Amino acid sequence: MKPFELLREKRLEIADNLFKCIVKTYEKETERFLIGGKDRFENPMGWNFKDATWGLLDEIFGKNRDSEIKKNLETIIKIRAIQDFEPSEAILFVIDLKNLILDVLNKNSVTLDKETLSDILLLTDKIYLMAMDIYMNCRENFWQIKFNEVMNRPFFHTEGGMCLSYLIKKGKVPGAASESESETVADADKSFN
Image (cartoon, rainbow, N blue to C red; front, top):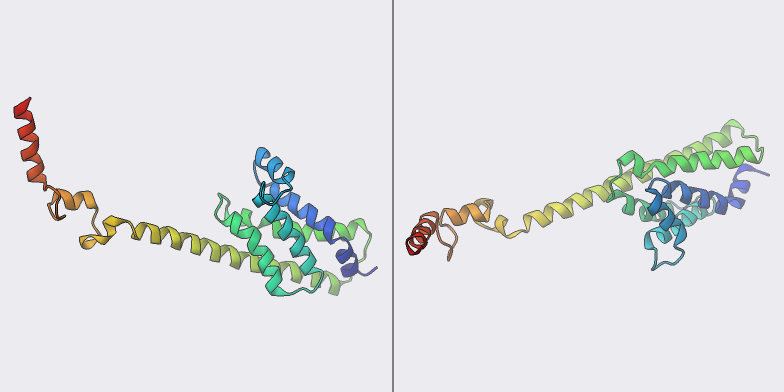
């Protein structure tokens, strides 16, 4: 049997093992939850990982369309990009994919010529580079959203982008007491005590 035919036949096994590699990067309790929940609504993260790994392998050894490979990678990486993973940890599953593919070929005693091995390595390297681009775009979008949230806070809409409490102390906010007025009120309060 030719290597790519075997891999096409074993893609479900590879997808299951890739899913296990992804969830092993989480704490034990989270790992059990991700593996255990089969329902899309009960366990959306686990379901998305499972669905995307199947779609990824189906596409790699099926029609091999870059747009569909990218879509499945995005599903996994968008989740991992906002979690506390280092970039290398977030996309480590692509290297695991390469190892899983080579393991399946070795277990089935498939002899690889240089050209076939080169094709497999180029394919997995291409997927790794796509994963890195997706990760970086996700992180860039994440930080842009955070930046926009900070910039849309009320104190950035005041004079010179100064902190609102500073402007109130200086009496530059209409309707707020200045620092000297606040001291006068505080002195009046002391006289009543």
